[in-house]
Image (spheres, rainbow, N blue to C red):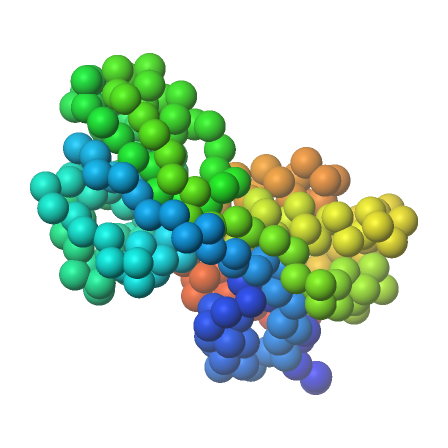
Amino acid sequence: MSQPTVAVLRPDDSRIIEAVEYLQSLGVSPIPDPMLAIMPTGQIPQHADYCIFTSETGVDLVAKAGWQQRDTTVCAVGDQTATALRDRGYSVDVVPSTFTSTGLVDELSADVKGQTVELARSAHGSGVLVEGLKAAGAVVSETHLYRLERPQTAGQSVSLAVDGELDGILFTSPKTVSHFVEIAIERDAVTTLQRGLEKTIVGAIGAPTERAVNKHGMAVNVMPDTVDFTQLAEVTVRRIRVTQQ
């Protein structure tokens, strides 16, 4: 039996390389098709009582820019973001038990009244954090550390999906989903894409990514318990092997 083909859409940096290597270790044939390119803005967070980080990418950028924590209470959405902060010498004071923006608002709402809160994230974050923290009485500002653009090379996974030639596909953020579907729209191939994915095991990280997939008329077959790429890959490949038995 030939190796299953699994498309991976991680950003066009070390993450796509690591993802390919990990998928190969699971005995599948990876189709690397980065749907995101990181475009730094050059901005760094202003000093505040609280500073919230939502991604490893944002942590990398502020560390390289020499951001100083001083007496700021640092918050991280997700264990991976928290680990990235600690690896770069920052102390992490708050990690919500639920790795979502809503979970962080719940964690902070009793403490931030009258406090300044800086959001250090991409230019594409939802309004949940801003609205929730303002409702809790915080003075909120936001620094856009980077934008996410679609690489000009993206699209191989769409072609294979349209032809029904993917055994699995891994969506790691709502933005990867929107770029994937944008390509299908440009090719006037949305209906054939939806049909082609019917026999593909679709894996998604987190509820926002799942909602983005569902919004475009596609179904998510597997979603890991954590926002961890290795677990996403493992559960998706496991499901593929079960369906091929």
